[in-house]
Length: 407
Image (cartoon, rainbow, N blue to C red):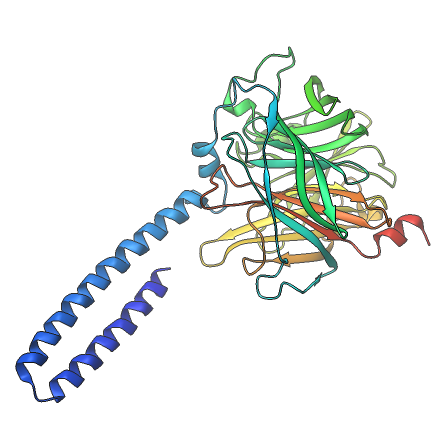
């Protein structure tokens, strides 16, 4: 930003000098002097304006990214609403369809190994809306359930047009609860970061929700589309207690194939092992088995989803001051997921800010009417709707339909 500001200043200085030279060469010395003085005053005024703009932009960046190496932590601490007294209520959400995933070419549909299936920008006047960090989509892709790091849940119906995601309707928002059915009074207890459906549907079933700050993973029953009090909490791995407050359980999914089918895969946002690799655990049959994921390029892990084939896709995010935010999707084969494994995987998609992304935090998957596997990605706006967006994006994963059926 500073280099860009200096470059603009340099260009203005050149223009000022050129105009002054022309004026002096005209032979009208007094007028040239007046012009030169005016131009110098104008230059100083422009320089001051640019410095103010640069300072404002720096403040915007700090407000958006918290002065951290990731785009979330300070912002999510300062901007989150107090939901300790929140009640379940209907919610009006506006959905604006995106013209495409690429900002430069809205007609483009192929991105890496994925096909664009539409996306929307979601907004609401309700102060509780935002901060969405965990996501579950029903098997038919028609219903959504999300959880926020402010301790709320969102239930809604998804609408489609010509096979593309078009909008959201019939939304309700309510508070996550404590085991006794009461309120989660402390902010550190409300920081939900990941969710996966493990039984039934989003109308009546059970979801597992992972929290950070107060690190834990709980089982919550869903009745009539609303999340109730937790039925139980899992025993977390002892080494997971070393996770930093805001770098805890960020990704959670159920394994849908292979030897560990029915178990959970929990991943820390960033808990490097002795070789700098990400830490994760297979949680199955009453035991926790550690595995590692190669850190490629300094991305943090933000979510994961098990596919019908048994493979797993993870969502990753990176922030750098000079490049902004990036997101990446990686796929791991079911045969490679095992205790002690070191997973590298296949990169399905990597996108920067030339695409329609934000702070992408939540991931889910379902099958559409044609049997295609659809990945749905949701962003966390840090309750900073002026600077960030709540994006809901969908992509098809070609080949997953064939592999899952074995044909």
